[in-house]
Image (cartoon, rainbow, N blue to C red; front, top):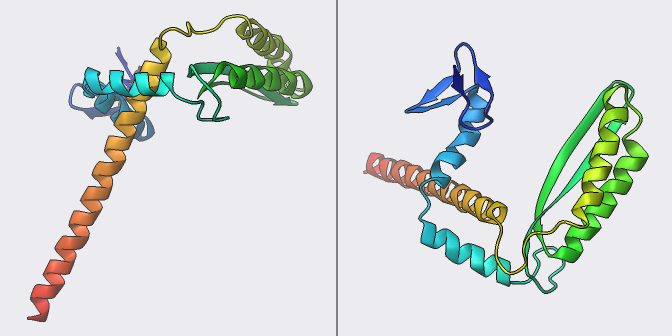
Length: 183
């Protein structure tokens, strides 16, 4: 059985193909384009960008680095509806602590109100935030998570710039066609 290149779900029947890559639906195919391009970003460009980000100021508070990926966890519930998420953010350690504490408090207040998942997931998410207060990425070097996030952002920027260039080329072609019709 095939797996979706973007989300990893098993594809039983159908799906979308893009060369050697398979996707479970059109949404994953669109998002998967970033994954495909990310694999083609040259390693030296990624290393340079990661080093600059890791050694720079925090993008959130503008304070001193080192900067890395800090993940906090959140859950909220209402009766039979429960949503839980992992929130990776690029920031300094201080901002990472604030995010973890804030999301632990958020989860403690709003996580319990759904059955059965709210009651089961809330202690897990709160615990993950509390454990995260004591487990940090090595400040002397960038983490693999930071490298991967930077690689994905570079790929997303490349795709966005490519789309803008294509739109500008279409506009120029239309303008040229209109100009020819006038003469």
